[in-house]
Length: 88
Image 1 (cartoon, helix red, strand yellow):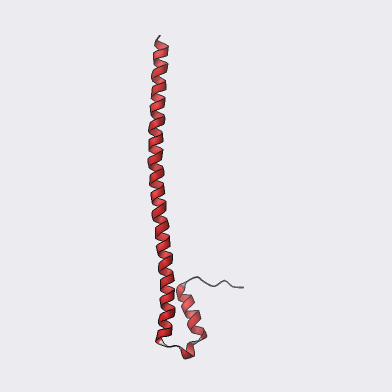
Image 2 (cartoon, helix red, strand yellow):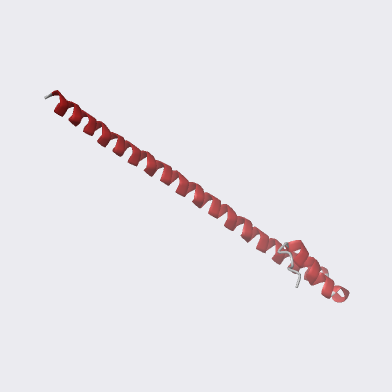
């Protein structure tokens, strides 16, 4: 069985194609309005996920920098300790 497209315009054309004899402008407006509303919700959902991903990446980057600084500080401390120990 062929898979139908998720494109809202195809959905509108399928719906209007079945009952084209008795359609009014109001009927078409409802179908088109539903398709646009669905598409808008999909776009907003996608944008929300993109923003959340961006925030997660920024927080991971900040956490990485803090961890890197802490590790670097420990390494420097260990080097100073070894240098003092070697000089004795």
